[in-house]
Every structure is written in C-alpha cells, then in structure tokens.
Amino acid sequence: MSSHYAVGWFDPKADNLSQQQQGKPDLDNEAAIDTMVIKFYYKLLNDDLMAPLFYDVANIDVGEHIPKIAQYWYKMLLGDTRYKRHTMQVHRDVHKQEPLRGAHHERWLYYFMQTIDADFAGPKAAAAKRLALRFSDNLYRHADDINRLQAEQAEKATACPMARIA
Image 1 (tube, rainbow, N blue to C red):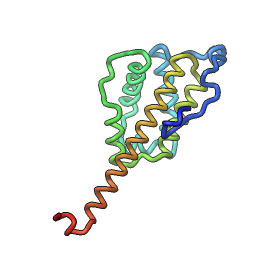
Image 2 (tube, rainbow, N blue to C red):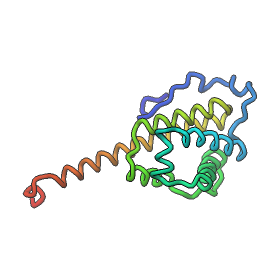
Image 3 (cartoon, rainbow, N blue to C red):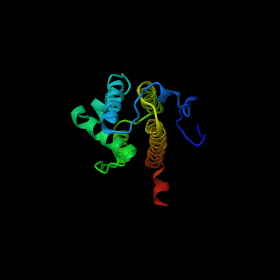
Image 4 (tube, rainbow, N blue to C red):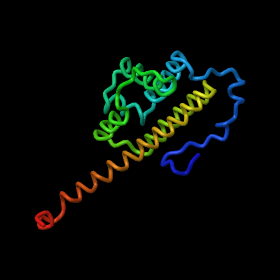
C-alpha cells in the first residue's frame, strides 16, 4: 500500500497469482462484473451503517442503481463507453445531505475487497481493487475538504459583524 492514500487496504496476497489457480473467474466480462456488483451491493444494503445511506439519504431504487454501478465497472475494467455519469458528483450530493464519514469509507472498501477476494481473481480483479482503493481515497479526501469548507463558512457566519464590514 502506498502511504499517500488517506484510506488504505493492506493485502499481502495482492500480487499472488495462486488465487487464479483456484479457478476463480476474473472480472473480464459483463456477466462476471454483474455478479460482483450484485454480491457487493447485497452486503452494503444489508449493513446497518451503509443501508440508510442508500435507502434513506440517496433514496435509490435498487433495480435502477445496480445496472448503473455495473456500467461504471464495465467502463473502468472493460473500456465500455455507456456510463456517462459524474461518479464523484453523485457522491458529493449524498455527502451534502448526510456527511460520509471514515467508517462509511472503510466499510465500503472492506465489503468491496471482501467480495473480490472471495469470488474473483486475475488482472481485472486486481485492477478493480486498485480502482476501488483510489475511488474511496478520493471520495474520503473530498469529503474532508467539504467538511473543512462548511466549518469555515459557519465560522465566518458567526464572526463579529464588524469583521464582515472590513
């Protein structure tokens, strides 16, 4: 793991090809990615910390959300061009409604890595883990920036009225 990540995942077997030899499929086709996304989201949506973010805050329709997430991974792993959303903006919008905390990022990453390690192996599976780490890290850093800006705005709003005149 590189020390420049705010959120990390240590996996001593990351470069070990023995998982491939166990007959696990790689994430090199849409069917495998669909399976991964379904298994991953099953964990997220049945978790007491994570489920409220999806159901109560983001108000997702699972039947619409899962295919969008699968398309994101088709794009990232297969080069598919159908996914057109701005992924970070979607998560920024959720963060504005309910702050995403370190525990959310860690749980999301834990379930993602657990899903990959349990059921997939190969170059695309390894790439998915690297991408998930980078995504989680970027989102965590961005959430921290939003929190800092909100605190600064709140501080300015409560500052002495004379300070605002100057």
